Length: 265
Ligand SMILES: [Zn+2]
Image (cartoon, rainbow, N blue to C red):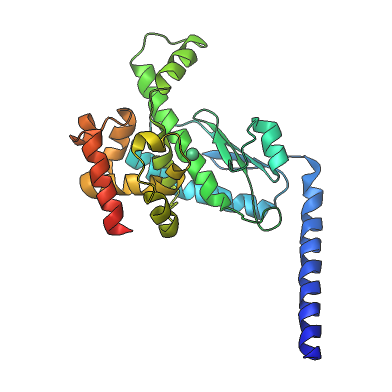
């Protein structure tokens, strides 16, 4: 028993030492200096994480870049700037967003910011590669909407153009905005889906509720199964108008989607 206790204590101390060493290795990286890593589609600016970690994010983004832009028919897309922060304080200082659950935010079609969490800085770390792809898909949605808007307006100069688009964008449904991003980031968690589906919320209600992050995946999976993935880009261009794109009222779309979730999760 004594021997067991000794081994346990020794193991715990060793783990604690490893943790401290790992933190201290990372700590000098917190100097605030930003490092840069880029390819022809993304420029990542990061601090407080290793080049290897930033590289994994870049690889995940690059893997998604072609397929997602193809299926959604994203027009030409300029280089996307990615800013990665290792602490919530830094993320908050740079983005002005203080919500404790927020881990990323897109800023227009060519920039997004994200918090990098792992077991060194969070009790419940999220997947940085998934967060990056999620925000990237927001950039794609914005690019599609902005270019479509540009093609149909006589206002071409800023700030009038941006103001006019921002006004139009207020009509883009939040449930679609998050569903498309969670779907292409692969955010499918069966337990969370069952939990959130149990609340029985409508798409309208989900537009102002965090459950959309748990259920969003299934909305697009349903569209794909029932009408084909090509329709996702059309839904984006038509601001979620199911009647026009899928030939069903939003009410019937919701009924079908709920049935789909019941049967598949
Ligand atoms: Zn999002």
